[in-house]
Image 1 (cartoon, rainbow, N blue to C red):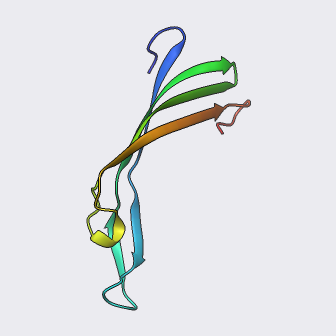
Image 2 (cartoon, rainbow, N blue to C red):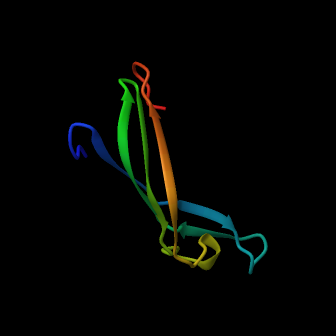
Image 3 (cartoon, rainbow, N blue to C red):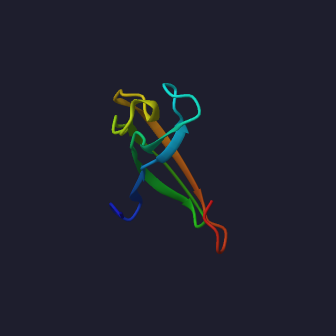
Length: 90
């Protein structure tokens, strides 16, 4: 999202669908939704092909099973470097 001529807001949310060995029943698996991780970056284009940004990142305790998440809220700083040479985004 363009905030002005110099700054953009980049939003990235990870919604993990995961499976893991079940700790209560050896040989079986637990499958479901893990903790959701939304991040927001205030970003500035440094060159035509390079953007850098910084902002908050959160972990929300949204796991459908206790084996699939931490069960805790957390937050911290996030950083992003976006390099776009020709037809790629890295």
